[in-house]
Image 1 (cartoon, rainbow over the protein chains, first blue to last red):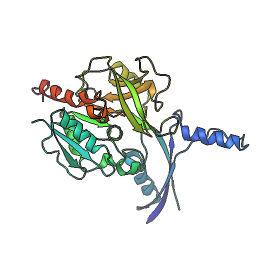
Image 2: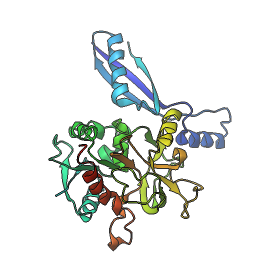
Image 3: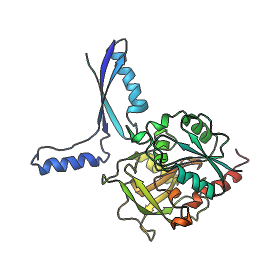
Image 4: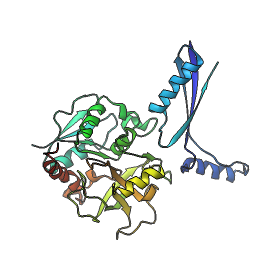
Length: 82
Length: 234
């Protein structure tokens, strides 16, 4: 089976995220005062061939640990479709 | 003759600066392609500046898995001197050969200008030719130069005096604002043995009298003395 895996990578909480701050200021300037704690990361989508959704997720986790996210500065979240 | 391998990744752009600097220091410097798996009897290795793989994903994240990197890692583990300049520093951090990471500059701008540095550690392969506390001027040119690491790592780096160069004001005092927002104004660090050094500023662009600055040249001459002093232990 092939599973569509969605990976979200965000800067670790507590680390300065200047992009998030700049966007937060811009939102505020546009009148969106209700917006706070903006963090900017990246979204990665990929197909993973595996026996089950759980296997696909486990493989994607290894990919994140090895390449897709930096363990020093980033956290990631995984979702598997279907 | 002392052999210096300069590794070229797709997107390296300071490869010739590093090669020429190493040659000016009196070494036999040559290029090694990132797909090669041999360092061809290198006595020292330089990972040059640039934008390997277009900085895709994260700076240095993909270059770190190049076919040549296992050889670089083995070389470093055996005590061989490895210098990472700018993108080369990012590659060394991504590879886990140096601790920490380089993140987007705190002001989000690409910074390209001369900076002042204080030499904090001279017991390394690439700074033993300097006086401790010397103030150097050399250029930086990067968008992702903010050095970060967790508190324990920073404490360890400071405690073991592994901060090699720090951003300072021209008179050597603490600078008001670093080019990139690095923790503790850290511009470069070493591993615990001192044979692996990475820094964001460019000694390779400050090692030729013809361009009016030779403050960086001793990075390339230091390694000759380090290697002869460590010849027996290697």
